[in-house]
Length: 189
Image (cartoon, rainbow, N blue to C red; front, top):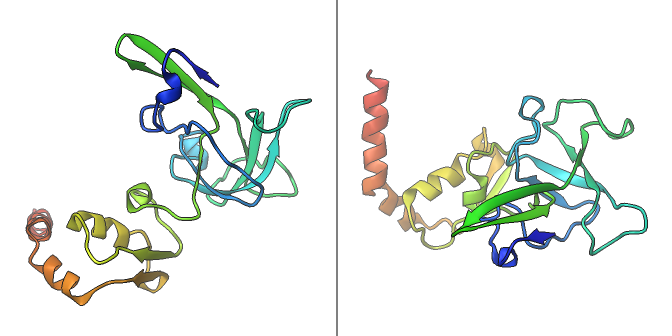
């Protein structure tokens, strides 16, 4: 549901990470896009799987679900469905923002598709395993650093299309050299 003049034009960035439309199905891998219960592990970026989509009586798609039951492996709170540990109901939330002199709002489920993630969306996440394809060039050395540092163990990382000349270019990259100097400075403190 959108409210306010021109709210239907808002991008997910402007609408506080809520998508204008969403396509959910049981078994879908999703990313939570809000801090719902930080103390119990339900934070922005948590990865889960859709278990059930529940609608109000006499409703169904394209109406907004009453809630979506997901299994989040990092969730440590009470389980919603006893037969499914780590299950939690994600309910619609309303986000409001200002555009010019107007206040706009959007109500939606704070879940994004997560079968694959951009490097930017993976920032701050720790993943069990990752497959990275950076292509033949990258815009900045820092993006590659983010991509390569998403796993705890190098054996859990697979890099596709990693050209040798990229390593050479990165070794003399100003951003990388500056970061190395800063890390050395901090280590020496």
